Image (tube, rainbow, N blue to C red):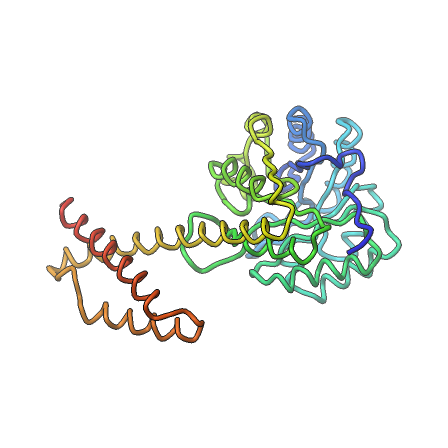
Length: 353
């Protein structure tokens, strides 16, 4: 994509930090958040005005009334302000309020029809646009949404990695699948990609480590949820941090760049690193299940080792590996080690009782 520009020329240096509450809940709350964001040295205030919620009856945002609060925060604290839009009507109202930028949320990105409607409404408009990844880990869908916006003429364009929905048990609210944004960077090397540690982690205690991990992986910046009183937040209370914590976080984050991070080999190595990280997380999840199995066997006086079950698992793994051009010998070695550790975990359960 040629001719892409920074979202905000005066904030073009990396990393770019964007912060603010999940939702604009009241004028007082938003201005307090804006004051904290500005004191932390963050130049862009984010706040949801219209909130797409999973279930009806949840807080769905104040609506267009909150746009005036964003405009006031912009004037009062010299911040750039952005909000989410999900329809052309949302975009029209945001433009009338002189909002500096908008983001297209994960649910909207997942729907090409909805994304195209917003892209059509963006024609002839010079505004910063951020495209969040789709709910599912589909890089083609993400690239397609970005291309739709780019084809409308938008050049102040960036992407946000906010993690992906999963039915599996993980330490995160949304699985990071770091390989997906890395692949996006490989396909569109000119686009800035921010990471959203708040939505990935789902817990405020994970924000710092996820933020540093994103910067270590070469992301251009972060979008962080920050609320003056997170425990009272009307949406996503568990993942928002206070302005004081935001200020400390920004002061302690380190931007590490190596020559390899900008070449093809560096991208491949980052991809390998993220896959290895996922493997470790999956192994930890498997061992957690193994311990639960060990407890069940202990309660029911069952033998720890079930040879028929192991042989069944190994045969299935070997068959699947063969379809993926992985040698049976390699898979046999891996599953033998995994099985040995699983047995050890189950024996430990028995010893602890």
